[in-house]
Length: 143
Image (cartoon, rainbow, N blue to C red):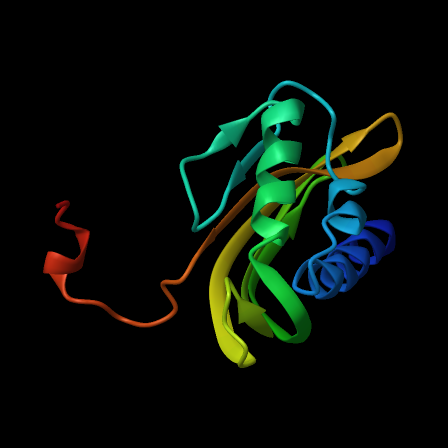
């Protein structure tokens, strides 16, 4: 069981994902550490390290989505110490993606790491990818 103040941040994170798939990155950005070791690894590009790159990556990614909504978060695993914690979830949303006009379902496998900084929990790493079911070994072979 995670500490209630970390669970509160995770609830805020889930609400921020809902805003994100509507095209608004600000609630999510507000939850992140501003330190040089913060990392965003999303499905749209290589990992971005450091606050400036992470913020720019979130802003760019939010422009891909519009009119969306978070539809569910399936917690796979969780763990926390007094100052560090993580969750692994399957995140489900519906959104219009790119120039598309239809709401489409999206499922992402996410790993989020949290750190206590100056008494408050902050996100220090988010990794998200579309791998939510078994794939053949050849799926990892590069182009």
